[in-house]
Image (cartoon, rainbow, N blue to C red; front, side):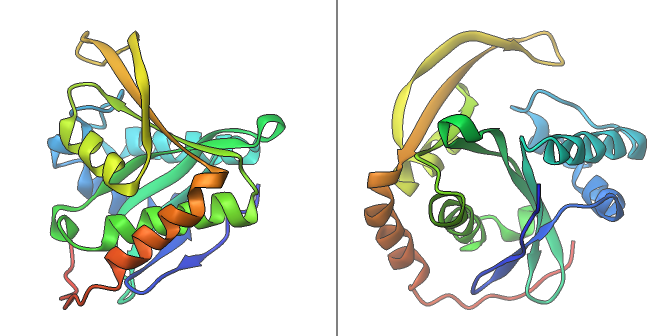
Length: 200
């Protein structure tokens, strides 16, 4: 599947490639990133495997993976559309990791704005999904802030690397809800923000 370059006011979403393996591995030192994700990355080989798997999913038409790059060229995270089902016109936004240097900035909001716009306007999705660990209240607040609707909890949906049996909470945005949510996100992003670019 072709992966576009998506550009906003603060960042670009750049197609993921194997050349990003080492810079993404820097984030693996922050174990908080993986607390609620069903994987652990302890060395470059495991990160390479993670990237390769994302690209394989992309080639199969099931994913659209990106790195998140500030306009000064600094890579600060990764995100993707996953679980794409063209027959049913839906996809899931997930696998988002962000450097601590850009938390509490407009970067995540704009990232979701770019992805949602691509999903609804270009890919013509009827539905975009979000899933997170039921314990991850910060993620739930962030997803709800977008305007996504909570749908329910899938109990004992997956086994985490530490053996914990995870309950997963789901959210969604529908095509008919997108215009109001787009306006909402544009309002957030219109607020003045002095962005100091930083390196990881």
